[in-house]
Structure formats: C-alpha cells, structure tokens
Image (cartoon, rainbow, N blue to C red; front, side):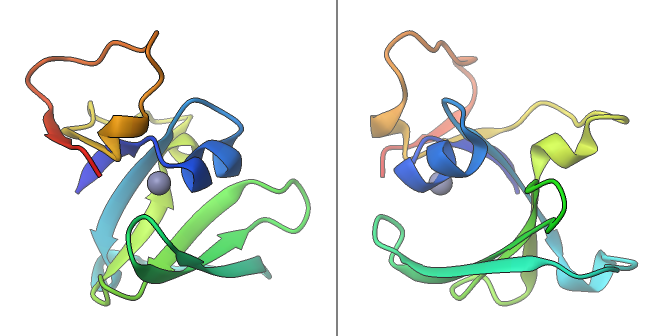
Length: 112
Ligand SMILES: [Zn+2]
C-alpha cells in the first residue's frame, strides 16, 4: 500500500499538506537499528491505535505500527528521498484534502 493521507495527524506529523505512507510486510523489513522516540496515540479518524517512531536526533518520522494492520509496517515516504518512490496509488482521508491540491484522477479515493 502506497498512498497519501490528508488527516490532521499526518499534516501535523509532516508539517505539510499530507503525509506519504508506504506500507510493507513486516517480514520484508531487513533491519531497524538505533534508538527511536515513540509517540503512541488513538487515531480517532481511522479508529486504531498507532505507534510512531521518530529519529531522536532530527525528529524525522521513520516508521509506524497500526493496530488494525498487524502484518504491516508504515514507512514515511519522505525517508526514501535519495532513491525516490513510485507514484502513490490512493488518497486517504480525502475529505480533508487541501482545496488547492490537485491529485491524479486515476488514484483511488477514500473519503474518510
Ligand atoms: Zn493520516
């Protein structure tokens, strides 16, 4: 799963108009290393528990775990800045998308 999310949490997490969320099977993650700062909360809009891991040095969101997606790990799309990512395929919490933002019409849209 690779998409953008317009929820308030993602806007605050990224300091931007949306977050890029790339989900992978946990089993495909080769390694995580080093300490992280953790922020755990109940995601009201998505009705799940979420644990976000940040770099304690620079504050970058690195990855997160979602209670309703136990097999997956979410990785912040911006962490792939050097190698880039394919285009996202969906827009989540689309109802909160900024009015000035246009997205490709072929992306799947989830209003909430
Ligand atoms: Zn979000």
